[in-house]
View 1 (cartoon, one colour):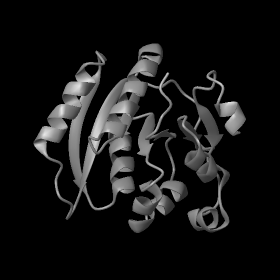
View 2 (tube, rainbow, N blue to C red; view 1 turned 90 degrees about the horizontal axis):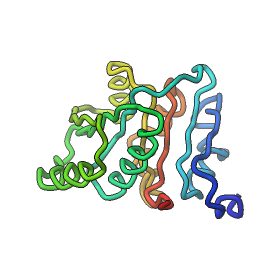
View 3 (cartoon, rainbow, N blue to C red; view 1 turned 30 degrees about the vertical axis):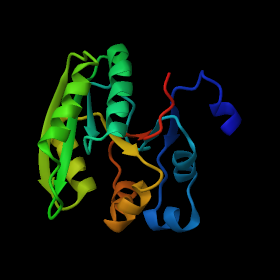
View 4 (cartoon, rainbow, N blue to C red; view 1 turned 45 degrees about the horizontal axis):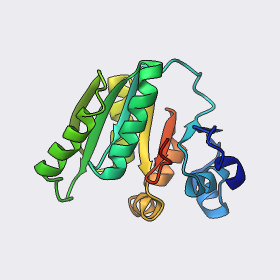
Length: 185
């Protein structure tokens, strides 16, 4: 696979969501997890129960960091082609230190440079990141949820909060995992 990904023609990897319980995938391994861990390309995971449809609204989960800026830049480039809107969302988990206003402002200023016509921002609170994002996506009519994957700490954060299980067991929406070290094109 590494040889294939070194070719510049590959923009995106698309995989079907696995059936079965998350514990089975986490304990016995998963092709999806392996691909996510070893690629510099975005990975789209599509649940088998959801028909393919045109993207109109994309929800991006953010911590307002540089990796998220790169992901948003990637999404604005493909958003111009497909014509979808971006809803950039930060979920403040209960008990966590809030993100600083200067960090949010710097993020928004950088994203403004991408000149994408339809971006909205929102902050929501919650106890469980994945459940809160899933609820928000259902409420706002999102067609795709985007998460940024930092291979050095993403899995640990998900396991710590038991979110990997929730994401894999209850996936109703296509999920795009954008690597923090996305290959620039």
